[in-house]
Image (cartoon, rainbow, N blue to C red; front, side):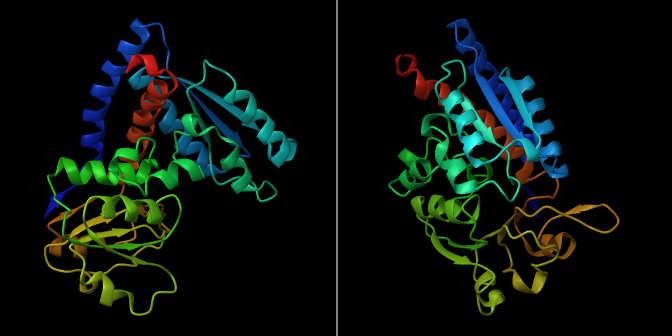
Amino acid sequence: MNLLDGKFIAQEMYTKLQSDAAELKNKGIQPKLVIILVGDHPASLSYIKSKEKASQTVGVECEIMKFGADEMDTAKLIEVIRGLNEDDSVHGILVQLPLPKHIYEPDIIKAVAPQKDVDGFTAYNLGKMFLSTRFEDLAPCTPLGIIKMLEHAKIDVEGKEAVIVGRSNIVGKPVAIMLLNRGATVTACHSKTVDLSAHTKRADILVVAVGKAGLITADMVKEGAVVVDVGINRTEDGKLVGDCDFVTVSKKASFITPVPGGCGPMTVACLMNNVIKAVHKQNPSLS
């Protein structure tokens, strides 16, 4: 078993991104990310800290706009986003999800200008990924991180059987498209799938993104499979675990991501990667 060490790969990415950010500064452009937080969801506060830290590491200016849940509604938040869309000093806009229930998330995502959508969640950026790898330029960060980990480990996905468990717009659907773009045969499973293990046992590459601790056990995994565990769950004793039973599944897998330390660090590194890409999209003369 080999670990797909997201922390290590992310550090390699940061070295390159630091150099890219320094080059932009030499040309008079300071890359800038604005993160919008509404409410005080504990997990969101933790994610924002890691994004802030990564920004400092790379050399990206990071501004956090915090609003109380009661002072913000859908229309007001759209106005805030429109102001950032028009601000040329801002290259990336990230609305931290989940939003309070009274704010309509689809309209908020839609309001972000596609060229500043560093999360890769707008219909425009998701839709053009269907065309080919060439159009994955602002891809969602977790799926992009998964692809980068597979590439780093020199795992060729062409012709391989890939099974995705989870169908969210953030991970499941986009990673399925990205693997299809690279020649994998892809099966997408979810909560309504009958006999989940019949599908997972066939997988050469198994990506699990459900948010249910211990969902995937060793008997559901093919010998030698590559297992990417995107799930982050907290046990009763406060320990972070994935969607796979790591101890037993790791004995059968050829490669597996640890939790924590696998997809999480890669998601944040790919966000920084998207901020630098967004600068170039907004300044075509740089390319």
